[in-house]
Amino acid sequence: MRQEHAMTPSTPFEDADPKRFIADFYASFTDDLLSGDEDAGVVVDRYHTPDIVQFADGNRIDRDKLVAHTRPVRKNRPTSRMEVHEAQSAGDRLAARYTLHVRNRGKDLSLEVYFFGQFTPEGRMRRANLLTRTLPTPPAAGPAD
Image (cartoon, rainbow, N blue to C red):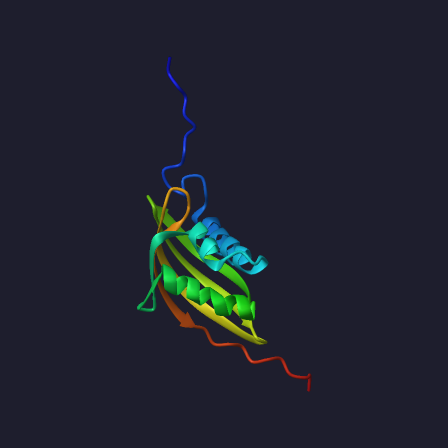
C-alpha cells in the first residue's frame, strides 16, 4: 500500500510572492520582537537558523550580535514601514530592493536597502547580505506663509 505524504514546499517562495514574503518576514519578526516579553533569542531563532550570518554594509552579524541588536530595538520601540520596490527569488535565494522607513525617538529615517538572502524551506533566514544608504529626509513642514 502506497502512503501519501503531504507535499512540503522545497523553497519558502514556492507558494509566495517574493515581495510579500520579505515584507511579511520582517513585519512578523519585528511584531514578535516588540509585542511580547518572550526571550529575544527565542524570537531570533524562530526567524533565523542557529548559524545565521548577515553582512550589513560589510559588518558581520552572527546570531549573538543579532540578539544583542534586539535590545535597543525593544527599549526604543521604533515604528517602521517597509516599501518593497522589487523582489525576485530563485531556489532558496531572494533578492530585493526596498525602502525602510523608521521613526525612532521622534526622528524619521529612511534607508534604501539592497538585500540578498538565503532561506530554509520553512522560511528561516540562513544568510544575508545587505547594502544600505540613508535617504535624504524631507524638511519638516513649517507654518504657512
